[in-house]
Image (tube, rainbow, N blue to C red; front, top):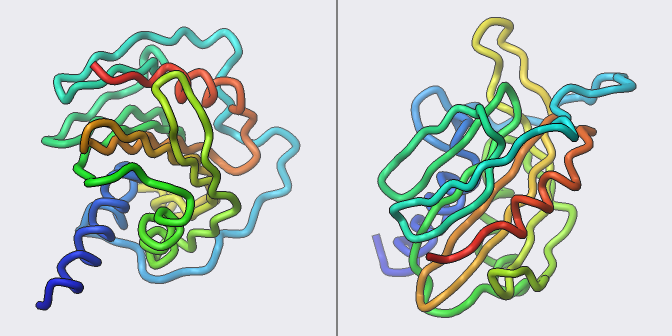
Length: 198
């Protein structure tokens, strides 16, 4: 494997494992085959809304960051990341290394390209730079298929937001997901704005 191939493989593995830890296609065994977007159900009120009354708690990671997460969501720790899930909703943060801060152009070439090559029918809708309390960040908005339900075998369509934060050679990828059409804009904004380096 030449140097360029190793770099591309590292980008793909980092993007997929960082972004969507609750799905088997991001973790290995049981991965979904290449697929088309799951049809959207005609629901007036899709599942996955985080209630306006939801309590958020401050999670401080030994990896060197803190972020507010919904109280009561199941937490799963790994060597370089942590995830919080509740049914089809979730949030994760993965830490990695990057020599320079990401830009919309570099993210389009690297992280976004890796996401689009996944078997979850990823469709990217937006890549923008924005200023948050933790500093400059790049946001990738996209839709994807979920992992099939363990009981029914059915997948649903998800909305995702992925924020990339950089500081002193460290890259943090905060990913948020919910069923397509869920109204979580304010709650996701709260979590993204709460991210900070420790």
